[in-house]
Length: 248
Image (cartoon, rainbow, N blue to C red; front, side, top):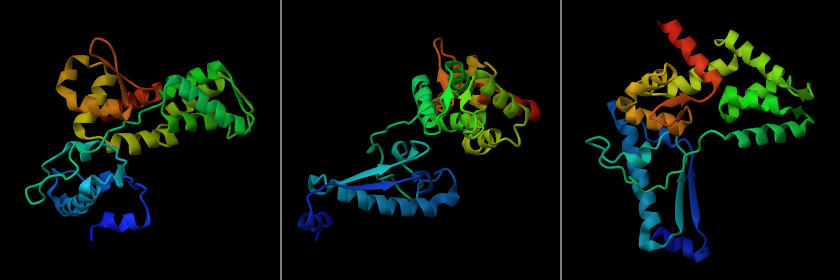
């Protein structure tokens, strides 16, 4: 008996399958070593798709979280693997960085738990340095308020921590985050495009179209009028510049 018929016996409610880090289920199709994993992916999602679409029951929804939208945009995987059963079936929703108002609201609300007051100028420095990245903003503000022991935080407190970060990229957790969670997760063409942006290489943006789309979705850059792009956050910009200087 079909699976949805079994469900109808007990409930008419919709079932939601939630799968996090789907990238690990859907590795790079260009690498032959990933063929076995992609075969398993195809087998599983053919079943899930069939159940979700069976007789138009609408009793199953599939929600996945991914670092990249490849799972929805790549059709033919590898010769022995076949096609992606979920090709163009997801409704994509990109979760980027916070806007300035959202950043300010987050910091103020978290500060209220420990009765911490932030000046407008302090929040402006956080926004300028972190570009709306929630985790980086929390890292920076945590140290600026000395883990909650400082109850009134001004712009000079945030600027002091930002200077300490710049003085020791290799050891500070923000520098480590840039290296491990940003740089190392990018593809080579995305790294080239990101370095081009921080150096002001707008003339070559058209050569990096796909990479630029990815960087914008990740929240690492912001496209500006005239076809250019800016790296989000002063700390990230300076880390990239420092990294390129070490590499040259």
